[in-house]
Amino acid sequence: MDAFEQWLNMSWEKNAKERKQITQEKRQSCICPACPSYNRCAREHSELLYCIAGKSMLCISEDTGCTCRKCPVTQKLGLIYHDFCMKGGEAAQRYEHELH
Image (cartoon, rainbow, N blue to C red):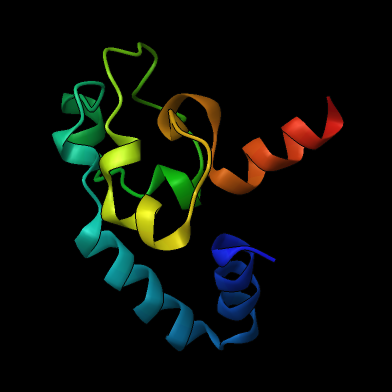
């Protein structure tokens, strides 16, 4: 089990209050707003943590660059994928790649 799987299992074992605190800590480290693909719509809707929450459903439809690999959240959780705002969160991308 890698760092992401351990974090995912640990976070769901916690109660709602602890999960919210863990997520808030990750939001503070998130660099999505510095990404070239992050646009005005995403900013207005406070979209963050695509790596965990999944792809942008409202705002990002054009890939103009990706900073996921430089993100402290990506590094801390040992994430292996990227372009989360366009392709989905780490869990979704891992599942998709298992199917192929």
